[in-house]
Length: 280
Image (cartoon, rainbow, N blue to C red; front, side):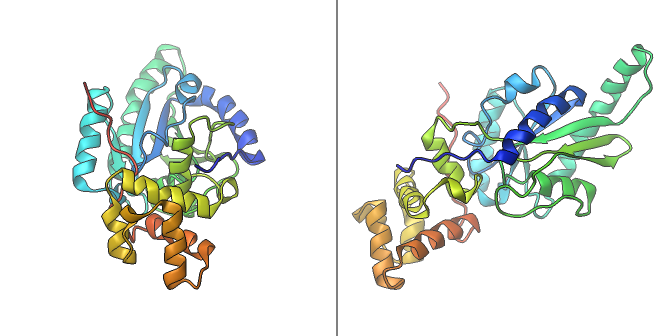
């Protein structure tokens, strides 16, 4: 498996600033990738936010099946959480997130009044790995584009407060990642989903591991259907070599990039890289 590490300077700086701003925040919107809801959770988040209320947002819900969405709802429900499934690209599910965030206003201002303070909008922060859709979510909440958003990691590089309404202010923050990715299986999934920067990994190694992972998850048929090559008969590395020889003039890098982009753009269909753990 490819060794994957990525911790650019702007993320280190933004993390320090974010921890300072958290003192001013009333509620946390944690945005994860619906294709990898566990791997896209920052392991230090609980330590950072303490007992602040948290809303769990699983973005890119359009890229997983309806049945899997239901399974995740049940699994998170058993953990005492209610996930909000969204597709920030087209706005699906965003109204529910806005309503839940604004519902904190009464609680926040009752506490402020009891301390002799004037009421103010609820302050929320949007936290998550790079490229999980944080800025796109904010733009949908605003109903206009005010923060930079693109389908690649590392677009947002500094913190920015944005007023959503008279009841809600949001802090858009750059994606945060652990300074060291201890779990390399999770790191691989983040790389496949483009939730960390491309500088962190080798496309050919990640694409080969991607093929092996799909076989392990029983999703090999999507590769056979699209590329006319059966991954069950070979390793992921051999799949890259064979596909390059057949269709891409032995250009293995082009094959690797094509495989990853086909997945990221949804051309392989509703393919998830994680499934809910079995509940005992």
